[in-house]
Length: 146
Image (cartoon, rainbow, N blue to C red; front, side, top):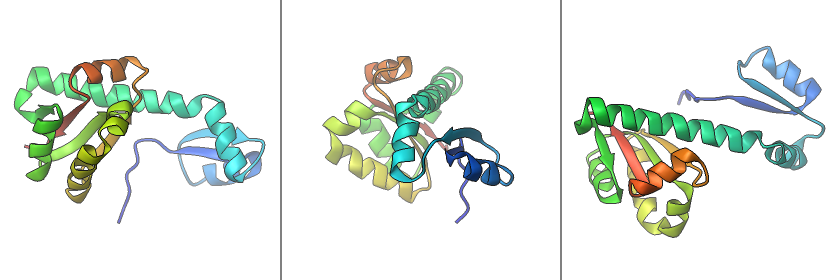
């Protein structure tokens, strides 16, 4: 299986980050330590949240753009997204992290359907502007294939 990530972040000790950066294009985040301590250092530095917010804003931007241009390619709210996911039509599914926590069992079914149809999932932080807008739209939305 070939992955096509939206972002690649190299985080770790400077030496390893520089070595890997020769082969992988992405954002560099040198840390003073490796392993789990380096992961925690990366999270505490605020870059992890910044990336989550950027991805959430991009996902919401795509939903809003398509909603105005081709509304038939957007599903808003859990019921509409669940129906589209059951048909294998979801290309990208955006969900607010708080909604995902509060209704985990309902969203688990939708996530399974989206993943089985090779759709992308974006978990949007509730604190940001994108999260607040998506919460107002019912907590989730999807961009459809057809």
